Image (cartoon, rainbow, N blue to C red; front, side, top):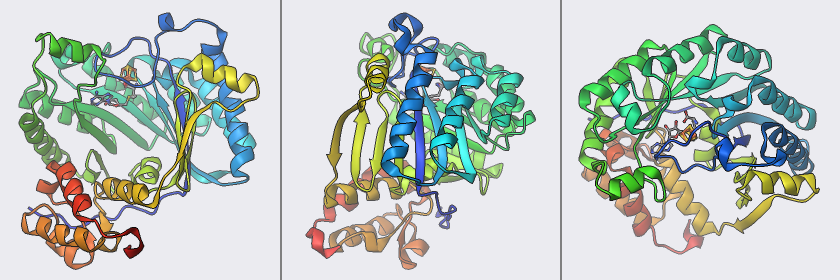
Length: 397
Ligand SMILES: C[S@@+](CC[C@H](N)C(=O)[O-])C[C@H]1O[C@@H](n2cnc3c(N)ncnc32)[C@H](O)[C@@H]1O
Ligand code: SF4
């Protein structure tokens, strides 16, 4: 089946990502830049040390970008809810103090179901947050156990309801699918639980076995089977059908929303926007220059306390690198990308992808490359084929 192109609203041109590097425990599958209390020592890596350093980095960002309007703020982790609502609101106050925050700014924080409460959500709402993203992962207790999640399945749904009751019109639940041991019925139950929670946004990722994680060691020792690609494809279709029937449409390969509830901050990344990353290990992008901070929270805070930049490295993307990134990211969006972004070879590959049922013929006739339902399952392959064929000199673009 083919899909009509869906156009999401135009995104904000400038966002702030704020990284909170603390977790109560480490989930076995996760390789994000996050630390448990026992892995950290010293004030500089405490939540208060984090807040002081975040304030300093926000002030530095403001000195560099000048009075540039901030349209979206996204606090991610780690587990931002672990540092409490007061610190998160104090961080947002620092943004307002140093930069013009748009009146209609989207301000999201990720949160874990076990470290939130009705009071937490009330405080965030009063402090100017507009959107909550909760890690649910699964409604099946045995799947949560494989993922080392410490909350019960019901707690994530309850937390989403608490956020809505506090006045959050935009609430996301994250799911992970194709975990070893998960059945089709388990994923159906997860989809039903998400819909029952009344959220307007769902992100769902196939479980990735990241090198160096406890999960990778368990798979290597044969304690758990590796996730299966065919199973992941079937589960993706199952989830997509369930969400679609309930009025949540895909707008990025791993993201579904009600109309108008797309995450504007993430659309900024996917549409090649500018953002500044605050926090240890955070990445930034301004007009083709990319840089990233030192990863360890104490080293990051120490640099800022000493009045120096926490930057660990930087690169200026070449035109070809930017082109590759644009195609990789924009093709994953339901709005797709204009065929004019491709050179002659890439446009021929797009025609072949239409013939194979991977790109939508109607959208193609209207000048855009848009994945079909089948194309979404093979998105990486389509991207590779377009880019490999897209071999004309840069001046031809
Ligand atoms: C960095 S986490 C932050 C959210 C929050 N700490 C939590 O876990 O609830 C963001 C999301 O990335 C996804 N994720 C992290 N590692 C993953 C992996 N190895 N495979 C698939 N999804 C993953 C999970 O769905 C998670 O909710
Ligand atoms: S998935 Fe979330 S809670 Fe688990 S370790 Fe990663 S960031 Fe922390």
